[in-house]
Each structure stands twice: as C-alpha cells, then as structure tokens.
Image 1 (spheres, rainbow, N blue to C red):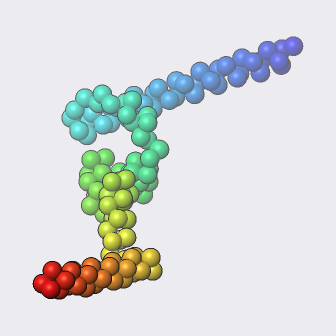
Image 2: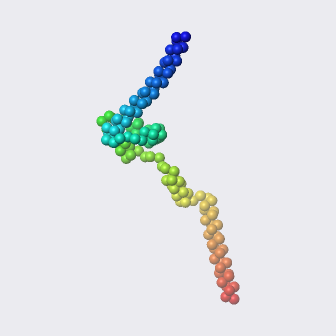
Length: 135
C-alpha cells in the first residue's frame, strides 16, 4: 500500500514541479527580454501561439549556436538579414498567377491560335459586308 501511495504522491509532485518549472522559465524569459529591450513584455499570449512557428524556431536555433556575448535583439536582427522567411499566401498566389501568365502551356497556345483565327475570320466578314454595302 505504501508503494502505491508513494507512486501517486510522486506523480502529483512531478506535475507540480513541471508546472513550477514552466512558470519559472517564463518569468526568466520575461526578465531577460525586459533587460535587453528595456520595455515591458505584455504579449505572452501571442508567444504561446507563435513559439513553434519556423521563424521563432530559427531564432532559438541561432541562440543555441551563437555565443552568449550577443543579445537577443542583435541575434534577431542578424536573422532578419540572413534568413529568408516563407512567402505569405497573397505573395505566393500573385507569383503563381504571374508564372501562369508568362508560361505558355499547350492549352494557352491553342486558345491564342483560336483567338487569332477568329479575329481573321471577323476581319474577312467585315470586308465582305463592306463590299456588299457598296454594291
């Protein structure tokens, strides 16, 4: 019975410790950011949502690789200059449309030929109509 009780106690204590460690880590991040930026940090809710996105993961990786002599702000500025962010939806769609316009696919070539043939037929019809009107 004692070992079962000990397992239950240990499980709850581990949960509490994990929660406490998370809160401590969050507080330390806030203090570091406040020290480096000299501003109050009030966007924790956004960080929780964005922390696993590619841009932020790159910053964390560069923090691990770089020496501790650089501040977080300097590292972020370096990343902005050197690393390429993924395209947004609007830019990607615009580039896709431009590529489709510039690219000559077999269907677009056929459509263009049909359009040219139609304009030629229309011109010949107009000439015939003008001749009939003159007669």
